Every structure is written in C-alpha cells, then in structure tokens.
Image (tube, rainbow, N blue to C red; front, side, top):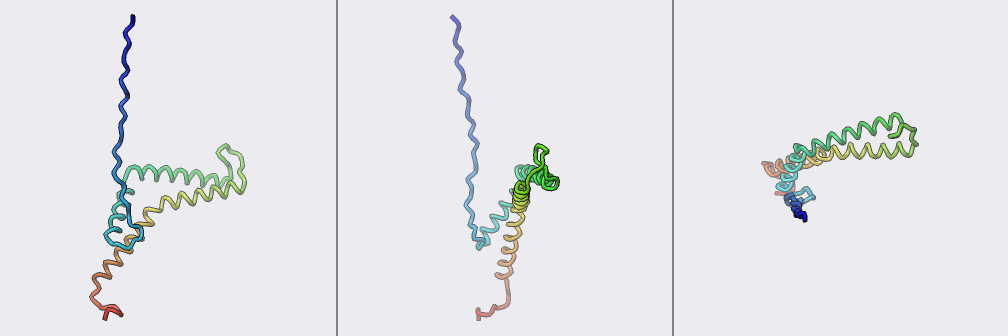
Length: 128
C-alpha cells in the first residue's frame, strides 16, 4: 500500500495596509492643508505614481495618435463619435496626471495667504 502524502496548506499572506487618513477637504485649516501637501508630495515621489505616470503618458500618446490618424486598434477607420470618445479619454488622462500639481498649487497658495494674514503688522479695516 502506498503512503499518502499530506499536502501542506498554502500560507495566505495578508499585507498590512496603513490606515487611510480622513482629510478635511474644506481647505480651511492650515495644519490640515499642510498634511495634505505632504501626502501629495509623498504620492508624487512614490514609485507607484511614477509607474502610473509612465502608463498614462503612453496611453495619452497612443490615444493622440489614434485621434490624429482616425484609425482604431485594428487599423480600420473610426467614426467621428469614436474620435470624440477618444478625445474625452485623452482629456481625462491629461487631467488625472495634473491633479496632484493642481491641488498642491491651490493648497500652497492658501497656506501662504494664511501665513501672511497672521503676521500682518497693520490693522485691517474692521479690526479697529
């Protein structure tokens, strides 16, 4: 009689995901804005964002060529409706790539404005 070999159970590896912070999206609190700025800068510096940037840029280039040539993936001509959908995808990918910089610009401007307001040595009209 042959021996039965017991199979070892497969180990399931569970990655520990850090707790996702809840941000105050009102952009009215300087300390909260600073946290968001740091998070966005960390995002832009991460390898994952660099990878996504490369993928999005390649997609933008590919879609741009399809719009110009008006040829689909299979090399056949595409309709104006399909070109319009490609233009929408193109615009969306460009906007998505610009989002971190867009929010950083807004938040940095607000943070600078608030810090100037706090240190204004002159009285504002209405404070007298």
